[in-house]
Length: 88
Image 1 (tube, helix red, strand yellow):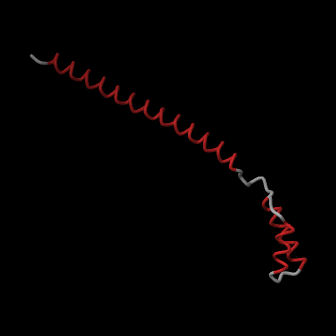
Image 2: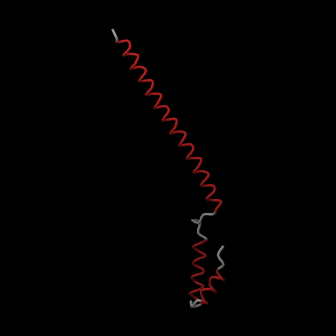
Image 3: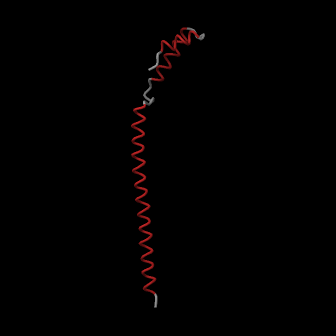
């Protein structure tokens, strides 16, 4: 939470007029209150979901690689079988 009074007083002390200091402090407060800001808890939830999604996609990728490997081995076995039968 932003302490607008402290900001306003600090700005006034540094040479801003009271109106300028108040307006700037209020603007900072409004901008910091936007729903676009993220808390540590929000980040933790997002990071947890990201990790979960990453593991899911990694497992899918591993499955696809193993499936492709099995397909290649199967095709190689069929080719070897036909080559062995073709020998006189």
